Image 1 (cartoon, rainbow, N blue to C red):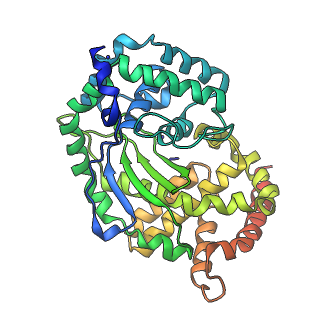
Image 2 (cartoon, rainbow, N blue to C red):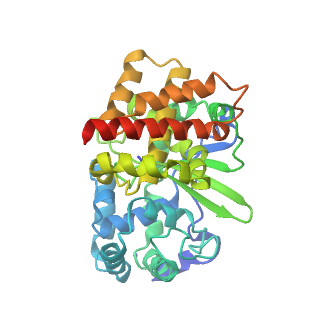
Length: 366
């Protein structure tokens, strides 16, 4: 994670919420689709905007957010919105949990797999997740969401075109090559125009396979108020989000070698991490690895030294004090691929490195 009833006829059959994919279908990045605008993500983000969730309330893209407010303002007291406000208070639902819900819905707003206490996210819980879906279907009809979405097709197409140069710059083959592991899943890049400044990586698993979404927010506009995507701002974030599925499982599969050092480092920089919604040492270590991998990607693709150093400095400012050392570990791994065919094979070395980071910074900051 980097941050309206004659209308009821519209929800029958295929017309309800088929994903509106405005895609470039770029062939040079086989295995990844995008950029596109996804109805489910726009719908759910609008719900959380109406519920006054801070992370979904940015209004810098006023050409779009004003349309949302004009259309949905009369429904701010809808039963769904009040429900979201309640569960946000009791469970802290928001951020990536919101996007996890969106991508776990199908074209008819039904769960793509049975909800449980961990699906779509542990923060939801099965009961509240199912109640949200029930109310979301009513909200979709009552507010005539379809008409708002249809009205914005030209804006969505323009946003897609503006993001395409960033997507086309991506070397997706680097991920499989660098990590030494082919991740057998679909990848989709989404322009989440109602999300404000937040960006997320979110994965949905069904019997047919896994799909990972790089969900990119919209926080910059040009002099006519249209969303714009500056390469230096957005490209590192896209690379960041696409690294997550290659990284997260490594710690999930074997957390114990990292627990002591992770807890020690979190005790030092935890306040900064919590401000970024990283509420555990595990989340912090995943983010550190992803951010180091972004820098390694930049180095491998010959970004300017100034850009690379700026990215390094940014991560240090965000609390990842050991980022330079971690990037060096990734270089050590890359230079010894004959011994370590995958980053997974190199993880014991990373664990030892983290022991040294914890010792160093515990001495320095205690």
